[in-house]
Length: 174
Figure 1 (cartoon, rainbow, N blue to C red):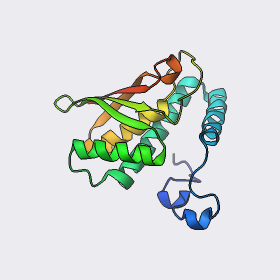
Figure 2: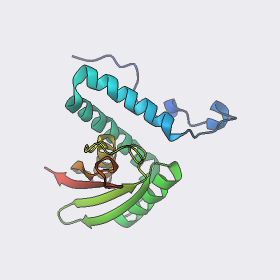
Figure 3: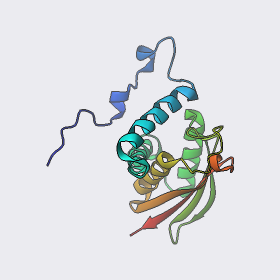
């Protein structure tokens, strides 16, 4: 069964010509507005589908975003070092967060990555919950596009659990 789609992501549909689209305001907004969108959407989805299905949907959306991010900003990366440098620069430039690599093992394709001042959760109250499932998908999408392998990415530390940085474990699967 084919589902009719009203919207399929592409960079051109989100507006690449900000000088025309927002001549006075420009391309930026405050973090509260981003979180307003994310957390109200999450609230509705959890009400409809439960938290696990909502996590799966956010992770899937994050993976699409990560692939698109990679295709737009990281295609020139010739090796893992240049990929990391590009991600660090773009995350900071775009206000996503401060990306850092804790460890990389290319033999078994495992990574431990940190995002400080994370767009999704930095400054939120402690809830004892790791909440950055969209970021899990985002990192997954980048790694899958770069390596051509499937990845499982999970947050192991989160601002909302008191860690004050978001740490992610990534491993190739299959």
